[in-house]
Amino acid sequence: MKETKNMEWTDGVGKALSTLGSVISKQEKARHDKREDYFSDPMLYVQDLNTGTSVLLVPDDNEGGKTKGRGYRRCSSVRQRIPNKVPPKLQMSVLLDMVVGMLVPKEGDRMGPLGEAAYNRIANAMVEAQSAENWLKENGKHASRVNEIIEKLQDMTWTERSGDTLLNMRAIQMEEAVMSEKKILETVGRPTQMEALE
Image 1 (cartoon, rainbow, N blue to C red):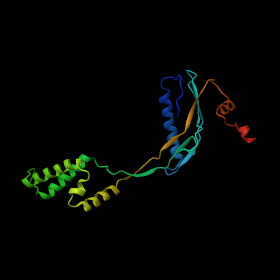
Image 2: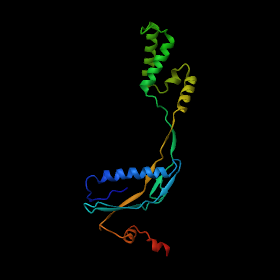
Image 3: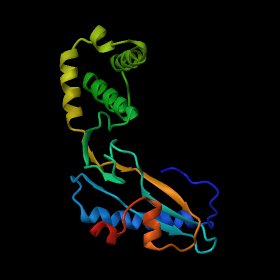
Image 4: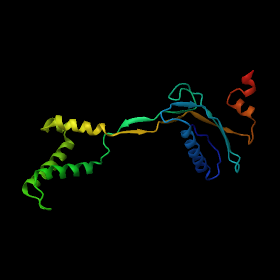
């Protein structure tokens, strides 16, 4: 929304409107299914009763775009794949502990030469892979099996997020403290209810 200049608002107005907006948005979500894609044309008159500053919020004249020329659009929820929900440090910890644990019999906290060598070899390969273009393809001994497992893990990380909300509105600064519906509609170039019926 385009910002209007030289408007004097009482401190706290932004927070108050934001809090009210959150309450209204929750009510809107309750009225609609999350898979619904819908449009509307909100029109608001907002006035600071301390300073007299007032603004009219109306749909912008822009045609097309994601809002299709309307003032507001709520897109349907989106199902998306998150390829890596497990933090990298945790991944490496699990990998190292599992692999070396399979190579070396458990003897308390003691680590034999085979286990030490496995840790060092894996750690060096991880460092080398960071600068390689495709380490698995160039160096991997079981690339196809590793890729198969990675794909399987990634397929399990689908998640759903709320749809985007898009706004195509403009703010018109009002010079008069109180305006009639007819005057407001004339300002934005829309017919009054009586004119619309004629």
